[in-house]
Structures are given as structure tokens and as C-alpha cells.
Image (tube, rainbow, N blue to C red; front, side):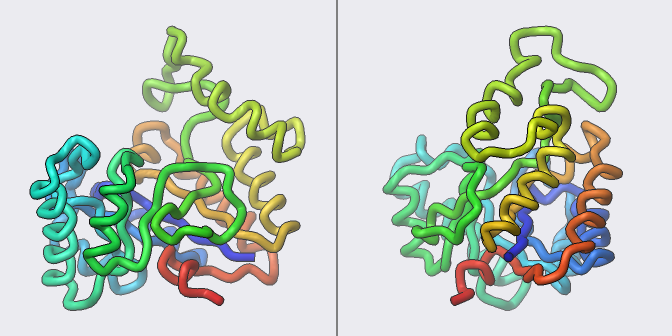
Length: 245
């Protein structure tokens, strides 16, 4: 089976995440915009991450791409690529649609800019993508089954059940064990097991600032340990998944 990971926005905690991935021999693609309120990495820190992990583009300033006119859309996507290629001195192969928003026009501009693929935020996929510019994921690392405001407080509104509502029928359809409904670590491990049985793809994605906000680091490391206990796991970056025959 294949395992890959991806991480958006370029937050300072990407450095901690890079160290954790390296510690467990895992690979990922870090999608970094040039300008974004959530980005806190310096250019030099992006260079450091690129020594062991893949860097992908995430728009120039994390804009709503589907709302832009054609000229601004082209500038946002080409500017993101040019910034990273000038910084790293290498071709940038992957693009991630900010907020997961894209349409056919956005997709075509990404293709025209020479990327080899683009990642969406769609979940519950266990296969290599049929369309390299609509790369789906397996699981967003996020509090589950209830939505949190921070590490210790839950939303006391209709949003409380949002994570469960979004995943409930997909969990049933996939045929995962009942304990998948208890917590995100249980769900993640069961999805990993499902991918392994299918000899498929297990693609984790999130933002390192979410790991901070919801205090998910220990659970993530426990998941990484679980993954590395298994044999016959091929560890790849996002672009390597697309390139693998």
C-alpha cells in the first residue's frame, strides 16, 4: 500500500511536523502560499523543510480562486509557482486548491502552469487518482466526532455534531468497525487498515496549526507509530504518488 501526507498554509508548526515525519520515516507535501495570515514560516525555514519533504504551491496569497477574474487567477497561480521555484531552485510539481475551492477554469490554469497535479480536500478515497488535478485524500486530521473550539472546549451549538454528520454515512458505506465513531485516532487507524487490505492509498492531510489548536500532536505520533508497525508500506510524497506506475 501507499501512504502519503499533505499539510497546508505554511504555519511555524510545520517545522515540528517535519521533524515528526522524519522521525518515523514518513513523507509529505507542504503546500505553502507566499502571503497568508496563517503562514508564519520564513523563507529559510521553507528551504529547510524542502530538504526532507516536498514543497507544493498553495496560491500566492490564499485567495478564493473561483471568485477571481481570469487575469488575477492566472497571476495568483503563476505567482505561487514562480515564488517557490525561485526560492528553492527546482520545479514545483504540486498545487493545492486553497479551501478546496476549484472549478474547471481554475483546474485548467493550474494545468497550464506546468504542475503535475493538484490536491483537493475530498476525503474517504483509497485509490490513486483517475485525474491528477483532482487528487483526493483519505482523512482530514480534525477533532471527531464532535467539533471543538480549542483543545478543551466544544462548540455548544448545532456545529457540535458537524464532524459526525459529515462522515457518518461514509463510515457506514466503507464498512469500518463501529469504534470508528468514537474518536479520530480510531477512525484513522481503521481507515489505514482498510487501505492496507485494499492494497490502496492512505492519504492524511491537515494544517499544523490545527494540531496546535486542538492539541492533537500525541495522537498523531501514536498514529505514526501504528503505521510504522506494518510492513509493505510504501512512503511517498504527493507527486510521487501520481508518478508511481
